[in-house]
Length: 387
Image (cartoon, rainbow, N blue to C red; front, side):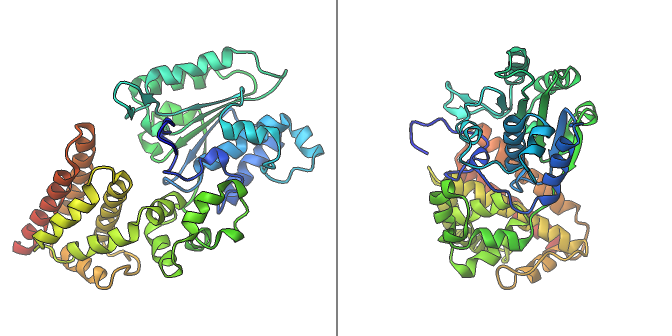
C-alpha cells in the first residue's frame, strides 16, 4: 500500500484484499451451502457468516457476491454449467468487485477519519444508513441483485446495530445481506434471528501450511507479490506458524509477514521465567515490539500473548494445549496453571485485552503498555507461587 492510499479496515497489511481473491481454501461445506441455496431459487435475503477471524468469511462473501451479480438467476447459472461459486478473474464482474467499483455491491466497514488520520474504532450509524440509499437506487439491470457486505458486524455500535436491524426487517426484492461476525453471541438477538447463520470452521493445519509453499503452486496470479512474501517463509517455520494460527489463514499471514514466530519465541522465553522476569530482556523486547512504526509487530505480539494465555488456561483445565512451539513451554504453562483456580489467569487475560485497547484509544506509548502487561503477568504468577 502506498503512502497516499487510505487504509482499509478489512485489509491485512500488504496482502490482497478478500475481494481480490479468486480462490477460497478449506471452506467447501460453507460454499456449498450458499451455492445450493442460490440454485434452489429460494435464496435467503440475509446470511450471518460466523467463525474466528481470518478463516475466509470475507473471501466467501465476495465469492457469493460475484456469483449473484454475474448470473442473476439460478437458471442462468445452471445454463452456464456452474458447479460452485467460482467466477473467472477474466470476467468483468470480477474486475469491478476487485476494484470496489461495482454499482450493485456495497461494503459497510469502519471508515477512515480524516481528522484523526486513523480508522474509526467502530462502524458509525451513518455508514449503515447508506444501505437505505443504496437500495433506493435503481439497479443497473432489471431484476439484478444488490448485495451488502457488513465487515464486520462486531464493530457496530448500538445505533448502527439498530440501523442494520431496520434494514434487515425491510429487505427489498433481490437484496442480499452478507453479515460477517467473529463473535455472533454479542450481536442483537433480533439481528441473528433475521439472518440464516452459516458457521464456518477453522482451517486444517495442512491447508495453512500449503499456503506457505512456493508461489508457483498457487493459482492466484493477481496475488503473486503478496504470496511471494508469504512463500519466502522457511520450510522449517511453516508448521509452527500453522500451529500458532489455530485454523486462521489471516493470522498465519500476519505471523509470517511480521516476523511473528521470532517474536513468539522471545515472548515464550520470557514467560517461561515467571514469576521471575529478566527485566533487561523485557525492556529490550518492549523496545522492539513497541517501537514507533512497528504496528504489525505490536499487534502480532499482543495476539500471540493472548494465544499463550489461552493455552495456559486450557492446560490448567486439563485440555491439551497443543504441541510445544518453543521447547519447554508446555511444562512452564503446567507449572503456572497448577495449584489453584484459573480465574486469576482469566482475569489477567481480560485485563490485558482492556489495557491494550485503552492504550490504543489514548495513544499511550506502546512500550509502557507492554511493560504494564508484563507487570500484570508477574503479579499474577507471584500470587500463585505464594499461595
